[in-house]
Image (cartoon, rainbow, N blue to C red):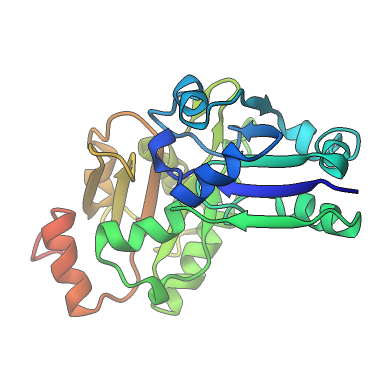
Length: 264
């Protein structure tokens, strides 16, 4: 066995976000795979990435990296140096950890090269302190009339502890379909109607963020009813529900996210 598997994060916005170390790793690989189903990079161009690397890049599906990994990417990595490119930072919000575990169990050496992720970018973009975030959660698209109660429960648990909640919004890149802030808030308000625990009310303070990592990032703090009517533009979108604010966090939100000085 002479192969290897390198797993490289490529950042948030476009192909320019890949690190120099990640680019060097891709350039020396025998085979380069790219998955685009776990996140949307708003201005990403596969052709521009191939130009940067100087090699062809093969786009893979979820099944290629999960059900069919043994007969596909892992089989290739037995004898060739394989590079897998992933939006954001590897393993932060994906299931690719199973692929790395499987590779190591097969004796295939693995390497991880990190990049910016939404998890690390949001504190910097908003001024919120990273250690004051509780458990993150996703709002999935409803199935018929069924709405998952998990996001409502997680926001409630974090608020009890005084912690912020990062709420990721569902996406299906292959359709494509990406949940907007307005859709997510509508779902959470319906859950509030059912439970009535005062977790996500029209007066609840939150932050809406669109296209983080881009030059036209949109960050707006305010009450839920204000965010529902705000035009955040194109996706991807994300929500933050606030816990207890440190005075520096409040000042940062006034400067970076247009939070009213009377809001808290």
